[in-house]
Image (cartoon, rainbow over all chains, first blue to last red; front, side):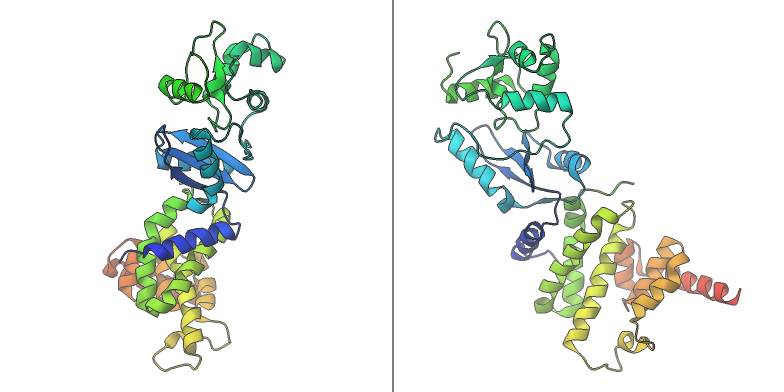
Length: 186
Length: 153
């Protein structure tokens, strides 16, 4: 006998409403394909392209605790801000992010990345210099590659010293799409 | 075996726990009991030390809630409900039996507690343990034999 949908939805909402979850997640539609979105009580903690939900659940459980549950309404605000961004109505996100499992250097780099404005680009070397490690461009590249919340923390705005796009966790085509959306000349 | 993300646990067991509660309580009362079962599981989840026997664990929680719910529905003890009569010292049967069975091997313990503490039939216990009704019956009876030997020792 399968569980009726409305009772399933009621339990998920109750679990989230009672504050019993370590992480709530959902999958949202976007012009870049389905986005796996996850949030703790403290903020958005994951955006993933081409996600395998079960692998993402495991990863979240390791980082934040095993009480991981799909609760669509818990991601409503994130979904709304992302929709606005993709439609060109929003240039900066008001969402809080939760980077608890991220190491100190990467977190510092991500905090600096968050200040790179909409529609502009910076370089790996420039971010490394701002973080006080001018020779660590490669380590900054790794931090970008492991960015748990791409788009909201705009690693697509980071390019090579010669202006080449270099790479992107979600694939270079998505980087191009995001930069074009923001009006960057490529 | 690590405790899986809650979504895995929930998705794996929600349908059978729902069916179990509908069987025990009827559709109307099963709704609240279902929600309470998994909220209780969620509260206890961080305290689990491993991911073994999660199915029997889910049935144990659901069984306990079904008993409480049945008691609310029928406050007067009936002759057919041995569960309600079993507790001579005022403690419910499942509380006594869980204490007694604490040292049994896990499968026997689950079978004994579900049979004599929660009054589940062997079909349900087999479902909870992922085995046949017959294997559940054997586990319960070998658990009871072990308890008797312990009592005599």
